[in-house]
Amino acid sequence: MELRCENLKSLSHFMATLSMKYRSRPSHHLFPNLQSFVWESQETQVSLAHLFLPPSLRCLELDFDYMMQPGARTILLFLECQNIQLTQLCIRISPSDGSPRMLAAVLQALKSRSCQQLGILDCGLVDESILSYLAQLPTLKDLSVELRASISNTIASNKGFANLQALSLDAGGGGGIGAVISFLEVWSAQLSLYSIAITFSAARESQIWLPSVQQVISRISNGLCRSSLTRIEIRNGGFNLTGRVHAPLDITTLRPLLSFSKLEHLRLNVICSVDLNDDNLTELANAWPRLKTLVLNEYNGWQRTSGISFTGLATLLRACPLLEELALSIDATQLTFASTTRSGEEIRNDKITTIGLGDSTIDNPAAVASILRGLFRALTAVTHFGFCASYDDMVPLWDEVNSLLVRTRKQELEHA
Image (cartoon, rainbow, N blue to C red; front, side, top):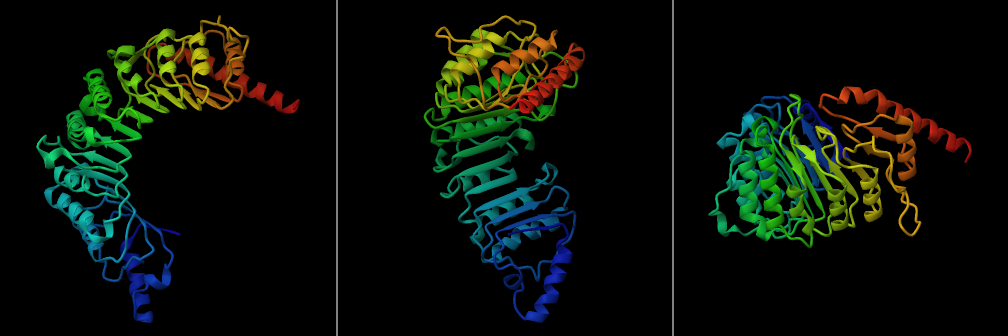
């Protein structure tokens, strides 16, 4: 059972009325099996005199993005007096509210008895003291934080996060890319993750995208356990609205990740342009035979004519038979390629239903639709997106491809 609340004053008044009737804590009568409580509000002052959370509660989500600090601190300190054992907690805090008093309230809440069994934590804003405490929490397995500042190299003997499996770092909390790098420098040697996600702030990093990406990839490849990591996501917090072509992300930048032989999911959505060709894609595919997701600049496009043709796409499908999600740019004007292996085996993927082709070039929609349906037997749609100067000319052509895919699929169903 989940309870969502947007006005805590009304809920508290409701419970106060029931308290007079039952002469006891009403939550035990009203919500005996409540497991999840989601609260989001813009209230500036709150009264929690009659609000008690039932012992069954395990998941709590608090959204303070639009709340003034006094009310938010009241809620956080309220956790200290509750007879609950949370396993999942989400605290959303606006970066502008990251005052020392607010951060101290967050730390106090995390240290309360209610949070001693936390397995999943999503905390909108943290500092070094909060991270130091969380590093010693043995139950923590999934951590998402927005970093406020760089982490000191002298922090608590650099040990901790012994059981952490999934980590998401957001550099938008004021710390910038330096905060992400310092976090990984301090703790990466102790981490045995299966998933890592890193988000940059577009406003702060827009002029140094490629160096930032290179730093992060270098730190991931040099510090994290190669035998466990299966998911990597690196993305920006915005779009390349200026149309400026930034320095390209190429195979040299990606090559350090080739050592993660168990990689299943790779998502890169950054403002850099991308410069890869068929040989590069073959190198990636051969290194990651378990790959299920490959997303390379789905939203900002590659900002140049791609060096990947249908030949490279076919090679990828042959080397990565488990592929379920694909987004990259190709040069769809190159229509000649081998649709079978040397042994005569047909190259095809039956899992992908929608493929993202960004700002791919195209000049013959009918031929492209036919090739795509041959390679992706379950394909029903192509998504496309980009900011380069030539993209507007490609839009009607890709829309025609989608119309042809829908028509072909309809005909197949009619004759099935």
